[in-house]
Length: 536
Ligand code: ADP
Ligand code: XUL
Image (cartoon, rainbow, N blue to C red; front, side, top):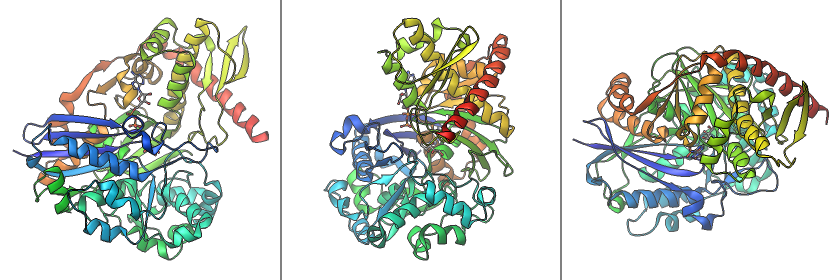
């Protein structure tokens, strides 16, 4: 009877989930929050503060420190000598730039020194741009142009050129910092970088996470030569290495790390992937049409599709770990926008819930465009929350600095952010022809039943929460199990995921017309505001 370990390195934390493969039971989970546990790295919500809201980086050495800390801590909690395989996931799109010491340092790892001390010298660039970065518009334009236009780029790579995607990010770095780019021997995704540490040599990206780069030809699952040429010239192919199929067994754990953490020397390292693809299997989305909501730092709506759908602007097609495709919409203003509103009214989550309960569906016409930071869908590069308070049938727009004094206004604000977020999501789902019959929910905010009730009402479909909040780490453990014993995804889902799903939160059908009206009003206000911004 063996154990498998799944790890997830997300925006704000690192989570480990251990599954007993015979019983299909989660036997252990633990998390470490980056800001709280590693304040010396100076992050706020896992990223480094910057004057320009479009520039968002994180220090990859922090992820190394967190990995070392969690793996060291596992020994007291589970019988690590029984861990037969490890897989992981990480926030998508983030790129890590390594110099020519990387390979030698990995090969020479020793068991009795912290990983950070051994690896501090391997970075050609000390910070990694992450998915919240929106600073690459020039590079996005160049890439779309090089591939024959945005539509062709979407057809080829699954997405139009996107600011946060790795290809444009690499291009910007090569353009702005040519000397550091010259010193770069390897470009890795956050996922492949962390797999490399455990493997003791550079690990490849898997097709799923590679499809978030604007570099992978979705049809052939190989790098597209024109995209490579545009983003990093001749050297890029060598620096990236070849992507491989998801759930590939890469080899045994680096001996020094097996010794350091107590894993058997035979413990296999399986490819790491992106957090959303990993969540897809962690939530049991293995059949065509299955849909989920991930309410972490980002809010993400995704659905499994057998074919390659053609999505409206802002949507992405990624490879899923099962080999199928997943359609995905990612909203940058997820939990941090909700937290911002909560904090603006000096509430805790209990107070925020109470505000949701005191207000009515549709919020009496009060609405919010929740653009606290640059938004991905719709594309908003100059952030700023916009509130619409409907009084006497007149929409009045105020900006986010308007002081909210009355508690009724505070209550309306809490509902407005949540209704605005789900309404925006529903609009994109409708446009893409995604009509969920059931939504599985994960991420930090999925703990909140009042928020999930609004999701059920806006989408008019039942919502079920996974009791393992970090379904990406759970999915990673399932990828490790799948790679190890070739269980089918359907069997793994039945055994591992289904017992973890909470009861259905039913949609209240009486509110269907309210949310249909809200969607129409939201779309109109959004269009007007985007037009206003395009003129300013
Ligand atoms: P990530 O995986 O992107 O790092 P998580 O999935 O761990 O993020 O979610 C973290 C977020 O969850 C926090 O930023 C917080 O706003 C949100 N959160 C935690 N508890 C609640 C709650 N009870 N209600 C709403 N949101 C919550
Ligand atoms: C997806 C995306 C985010 C990150 C962070 O495209 O950018 O969901 O994966 O979780």
